[in-house]
Amino acid sequence: MLVIESWVISNDSPVPVSSEMVLEVLRSRIDSGQLETWLTSSSGRSLAFVTNTERAMVMLLEEEGDPGEHAVDPGAQGSSDGFVLSNGQDDEYSDEDTVPVHEAFRLVKQIVGTGSWPTDARWVADR
Image 1 (cartoon, helix red, strand yellow):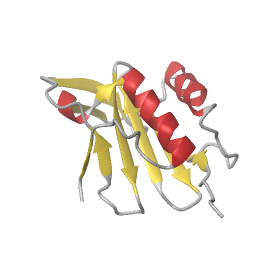
Image 2 (cartoon, rainbow, N blue to C red):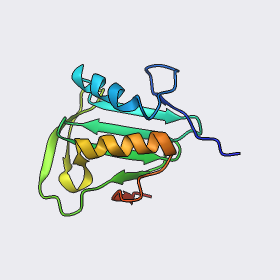
Image 3 (cartoon, rainbow, N blue to C red):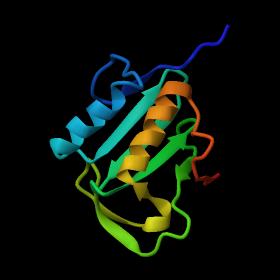
Image 4 (cartoon, rainbow, N blue to C red):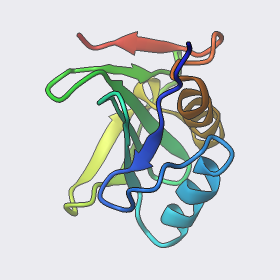
């Protein structure tokens, strides 16, 4: 029997969020100034989404302490700032290590729905 893991918004609500609803939740959080969102799965994995509203860092971690893997945009030039974390820290990332926000939304929706990156996604393991 195949069991799909469920995901919740960390520190927000114990109610699972579906792949159909996750983008609405992310957009609402961004609109309220919350640019960092962590989702936790029923299997203990974590999914991070941090945005400056134009680009986003998307990271998938297997367990606490795992360096994880993150989406990349090979060949992107420069860097972007304005990735404000919940503790107020304002980060800057290489554009190669982030993706356009519309692509980040697609990645998060797929991971929440299936547990895996889309087959055409570009990502690197940081392990």
